[in-house]
Image 1 (cartoon, one colour):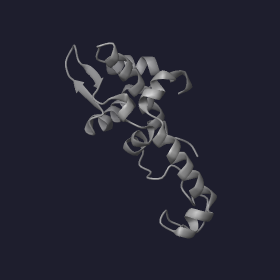
Image 2 (cartoon, helix red, strand yellow):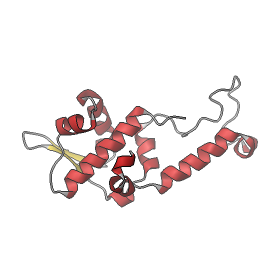
Image 3 (cartoon, one colour):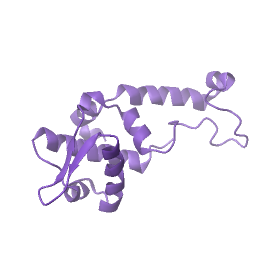
Length: 141
């Protein structure tokens, strides 16, 4: 199981934007790109998704940039995962299986499949982790 680059970079960018917002400044995309070592083009895709769901606000122009539009305590890592990643589940129950008959709603799978149990556990961790916690512990990201 691996968290996608889009999610990891999105979290790093949001932490940067949140810190800038807290200081009363707008975070410019070039600054985020250089600070977090993320290409501007890839960062634009990530920020577009976050802007569309009102996690951040953008201002155009020479004095433009991005600011956080939600309280960091009100956004979880699981919400960010769902916004930035195309996968619904954190861990696919049968990604290594030849038969893909097991689904999230399959009671037998959800109680016996190790991948389903891991998905539930990982999802719980992501749901319990807020952006505020990541800001406090940004060296762990």
